[in-house]
Length: 184
Ligand SMILES: [Zn+2]
Picture 1 (cartoon, rainbow, N blue to C red):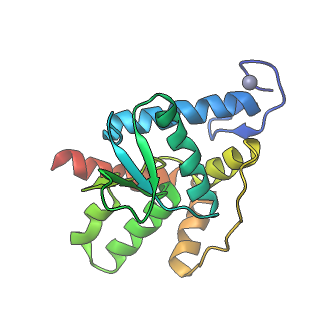
Picture 2: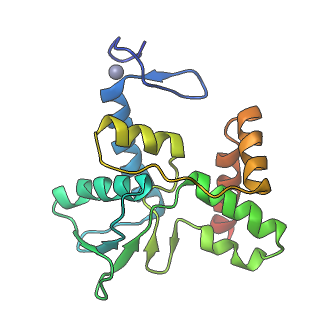
């Protein structure tokens, strides 16, 4: 049961805490604001450009940007748009942990900064969300999207297997990178 309201749960954290539909949406929205504050992504007066697509991550990104437009903080425009102050992309913890490991394996450490939550004009408002959380949010909110088949390879399979055996390993990979960023 959802601890807060005794409704049927739709989501369970690795620490077994469970959330019902409406508490999950509240959690998701709060986390959007947390990510934004923590990484200093969206500021009042920004013109944020994003890619319009039916991929679930892009659809959820478009939806959560409304939190900021509804507060009258920002203007949102579709790409291509030259005069945007920032470009929001839908990279999340699954994509970034995969890129980080591949960058390290390929000996391209100098490119690791590209996996930071903010690189120049590019911001990643979904940075700390998992694929699972994003998919569930889209389903609960009834957003229209197409489930894309993700291209897989041996390294991606390896990280996914590792995540099953050691939950939170993707978070640990991304956190390690953030520690580097903090140390810079
Ligand atoms: Zn609840």
